Image (cartoon, rainbow over all chains, first blue to last red; front, side, top):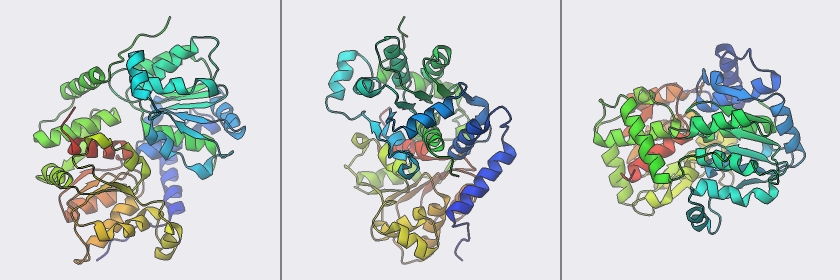
Length: 209
Length: 209
């Protein structure tokens, strides 16, 4: 006998989001933030994630405004850039990952850093007013913070800081949260990754559920 | 003052994997499985994930053999197919996602199912001996199980069953685990997603850490 299951995409979304809103503790978030956190919980399949998500005040509105104004979205990994749902973007925004740019291995070697960090050097000229989404590499987030220590480096409109893992993830997000060079959000600790990061981008891009 | 942090990719991997092996309870896994689970924990930033991972006996060896023999790897989402580290693949294997194939919206409408499920219809002819990796959509895993109820449908060599979320994820993985139509692995419950799925593929593809 074939399995019977819910096959309607919108019904699946509706039931998923209702379940999340019933189970998760979302009282600490404003309406904009709540919508982002719900989508992140959905992507991770993890009620409880909300305890780890923090926003600077007005971050979601600032990031959404930048997207509406056509800001490019710079991503540290192709799993992030490929996950962004293009029809949700308000201004047909460019979604850019430079991890495989020509010469990136040589540049990383020259910098004595990872390819993920080296890739950010290709963002510098267009960083002003952009959205930055770090969903994989702590070294990318640390390098971004070091770039922004230079007052001549253009300022992004907002930073989504969700690198994941066991070495540098917690530390790089703590550093972002201490510095707050521009409006930003983080998933604290070891958790993070491309799925949560993509969910945050997709939620900021459009309120549609 | 610029931040100081570990910039050597191999050192980051080594320290991460050592931390995971110190903290996670891996006693229930054989050597092949352990290597897969460690990489999945790494991708998720989540010690404790191991409690949710199950393999049928010999699944890792069967999947690795199929890859070495040149099996294509079918993925339900581009975040999965894009995440696979190509140099790790033993036979320059094809990594295929058909979610954006021509006519997929019309096919989904005709089937009364999601695009994720409809995309599998494009796999059927090459499914024999292939690796199947479901890292997003419960509907894709359910549809695969229904396809395999037809004895004339070619059998994949192995199934990585890691759809994520709140509607159908648990149920579809429970169904896979009950049926076990071919060697398979699952992350049980709501957890899953592209990062864990990619980690499993990458670990099966190569023992290199």
